[in-house]
Amino acid sequence: MIGIDAKLGDNGHDLAFFEMSFCPSLELVSLVRRFVGTFYLRVLDDADLASRVALATHELLENAVKYSLDGETNIRMEIRRVPTGHDIEIRTRNRTSPERAARLAGNIDEMNQLGNPFKFYQTLMRRSAKSDAPGGLGLARIAAESEMKISCVVNNDTVEVRAHAPAAEAA
Amino acid sequence: MSQTVQLATITTPEFTATPRLDAEVFKLELTGNADVAAIAPLTEMLVDLHGEITRVGARQVVVDFTQLEFMNSSCFKSFVTWISAALDSPSPYKVTFRSNQTMLWQRRSLHALSAFATDLIAIETT
Image (cartoon, rainbow over all chains, first blue to last red; front, top):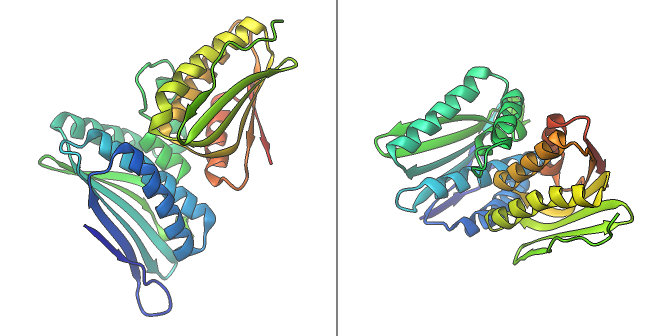
């Protein structure tokens, strides 16, 4: 399923979004990132914000694809016009194991409790530097580099991860 | 100092990493899209790269990102591991990253990497 409504502008629309449910291979993630970067650049005319959102999209999708139980992932991207600018949100949703969902929620809690995404990113970099395990930096990278707030909602075997850039920070 | 680099170039459909020794400066040029297909070969190369730098006794390494469209966090983590090894090395060397100001993600990612090793990393922007 693919839905796109990008009518954000002077025509009375306050919300632009697109949503996809698909079974992406990891190789397709880069294609989606390129599309998202182009989409946001076109809609917002803000290259830095488009780059940040594209990076966040890539990291969220790679995580979702890697840990999806059935290979299916839903991604929804919203741009909402508010009085102070544009509110940006990316959501990925997929089925995953309870262990993975709990670990993900714990990691996000740890990051948000510290309240300093860049400091947490540096801590995670030091922690992961000595580890042979691949990855582990993706969500912290979104928070620190894309300057987006990360949260997640777990509902049975489904996890939804949200990356949010409020208007005041996105503008 | 030996002038032969014992590292193979990485070539995937969307990514290349080319190491070479130029005078006494070790150079690594990355091009394309460092996504999931690049993780394993790049991780292996960066482990070997540290060994090669130490073996040839290079004191300066230049990593060229100017043609690098994107790097995912797993590939970025490989750089973190390499830089960590360089920090711990008894034969220290400096690393200069050449970045492309039109690739906007590079400024943020390289800022984070340089904060991880402030005395070791320099950034040049073109």
